[in-house]
Amino acid sequence: MQLFPCPFCGPRDEREFHFAGEIGKTRPDTTGEVSAEDWARYLNTQRNEKGRVREVWMHLTCSELFVMERDSVTMEVLSSTPLREDVE
Ligand SMILES: [Zn+2]
Image (cartoon, rainbow, N blue to C red; front, side):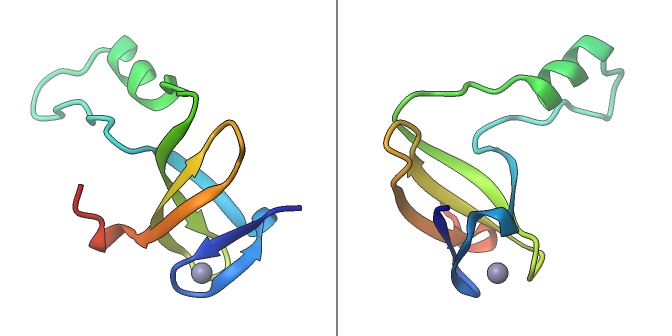
C-alpha cells in the first residue's frame, strides 16, 4: 500500500483515489463537429510518460480534484496541489 497526499485531507491510502487524467490534454472544441476518433483519442489515449509526470487525481473521500506530481518509475510522490491553485 502507498500513501497519497490529498492536499485537503493529508496522507491517505492509495485505494481512496481515482486517476482522472494527465495534465495538458486539450479537450476537443465542441462548438463544431467532433469525430468519434478525436473523442476516442482524447478520452483514451495517454502519453504514459516515464519519469516525472503531472496528473489529475480525485480523492474519493472528499471528492476534491488535485494535481499530483510523481515519478512514474519510482512511484515517489513529489507534490500535490489543489487543481484550482495549479498555475502551470
Ligand atoms: Zn481529500
